[in-house]
Amino acid sequence: RPRRMIAARRKDTFAVMANSSKSYEHTGQEEVDVYVDSGVGQPDRLERIWAPFRMAYIKKRTQDPFVEAPKKTDEDALIIARGEEVYALLNLFPYNAGHLMVVPYRKVANFEDLTDSETMELMAFVKKSIRVLKKISNPEGINVGFNLGKASGGSVGDHLHMHVVPRWSGDSNFMTILDGTKVLPQLLKETREALAQGWQEIELEDSQMEASRMENPSA
Image (cartoon, rainbow, N blue to C red; front, side, top):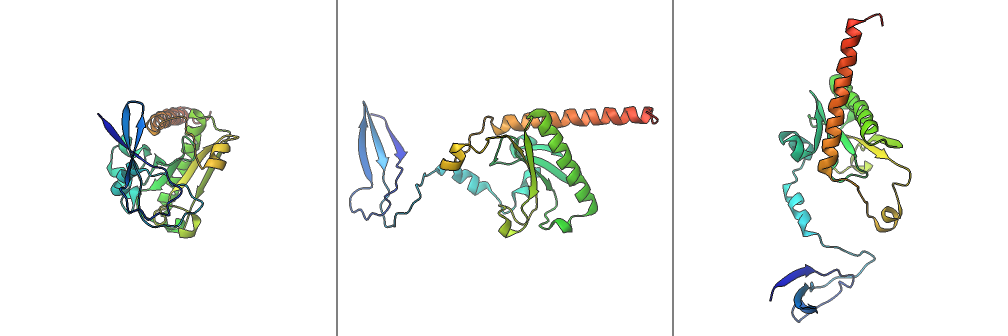
């Protein structure tokens, strides 16, 4: 008969078990192997959920994902738009759908170390990101900011990046507050496609407006 292995969800991790680490359960006609870890530990307030599928992300991640991302395709790296010195991409672990970041290609930790041209293009990308989010997602508010330095809470402290996060009233609901769980209504791939399309549309609008201004400078 077919068997399937499932991971046990355990809070009572304090155990020294001399017997087998496998126990067997019967669910209808199917025999299920339940794996129970054995060893020594002290229980605490945390409930742990083992997620081995995330090991692929851990193994692939480099010390600086912002250096590696532009080497990939836009689809694989979730890149929305590329500039001369900066680019915009979705956050792999978004707070809300549409949570994006604007990043300089050059690895730099301190905002004051950006060149003038990098600063200008970064802020231009932030402005355009806000316009795109308002066009596509119609948020009620937007958070914009840096996490600079190790104590600021950023996950990549040696390569600055500007967060642009769309917000809605009530987006921190009971699941986020009580269970630490965020519900996102759209897949990252779909969000990237929508924002990339919106970015192109805004660039086209801007170029048409600029052409009209050049034709009618007195208008």
